[in-house]
Length: 167
Image (cartoon, rainbow, N blue to C red):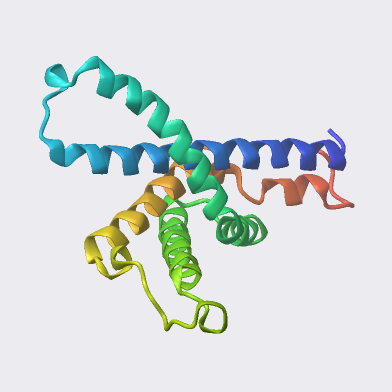
């Protein structure tokens, strides 16, 4: 396989891994939110089950949107460094979740020169349980990404580098 084809294949795998990570983080977040309702699996009404089938993909869109830039940095570092262990991806996912919380906190402040107010922060950002839930979503997403795309991170560098025989 030539170098360009290897890079395009790797980019496709990275994209698919990111989509799977967003869905895994979304499912974790939705089930963490629904979990305290205390329903056993046989007690869940069909309406809730149907709404979970809608809530997970919709929440995955939001997670993929907000986590895109921090995840791009984490993915690029993992690819360039050739990290292939699950712990690196779990920690990177936690850092991505923390970065999403930090960026969302900064975006939630009011702008004093527009509305004349001070820094009004959403009360959810002061709840440690909410913060840990978002960081936990990042960890779950990082591990899901590792399962799909992280196991072969950096392998494209050997295939693309000139002077080496194809394997």
